[in-house]
Image (cartoon, rainbow, N blue to C red; front, side, top):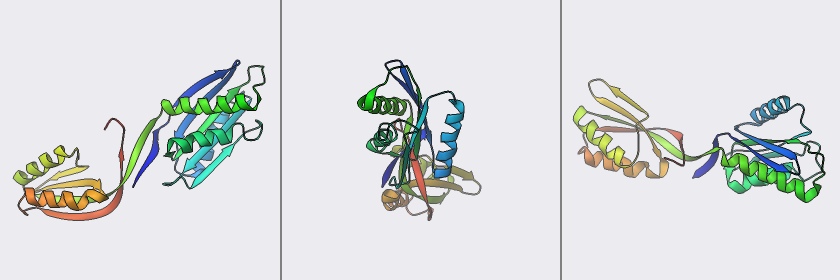
Length: 210
């Protein structure tokens, strides 16, 4: 199973009739982190008219919250949350800060402005993919270790740790669905001379450029 997470937060701006909407996003893994982040942004932009917020947390986005922070009900927090859920991203919090420009925008204008601000912030953020994985420990002699590393390079798998002593120990993190086939290929490549041990479950995070 793969999950899209906010790996690195970003910010973006949208302007509507001289009202400025500044979106700030940050990765969060708990409601406490989200609350601390929202409080931090409210302190930073203490002179703004509104600091509306939304967040989504959990592998399946089980936890969601949003706040209109004084804007008409349903015109800010809910549209902001819908952008997050629509993007498929989780473990993300966003605050949109509004500096009032002197002209009322109406319900439609507010929904559009808060929506566009979050979209702009997401465009400047880094989204990562999390895959459920498992650790493999591979112990081989120096010659076979080079063969294993070449095989792994063909699969774009980089050992997370390499230890050199009498033998070479490689610690790998591989997708759970691929673990058995990778183990089989390593065994075939080394003619069964290496020792492979399955370890703990892990989460593998990859970025779009990888």
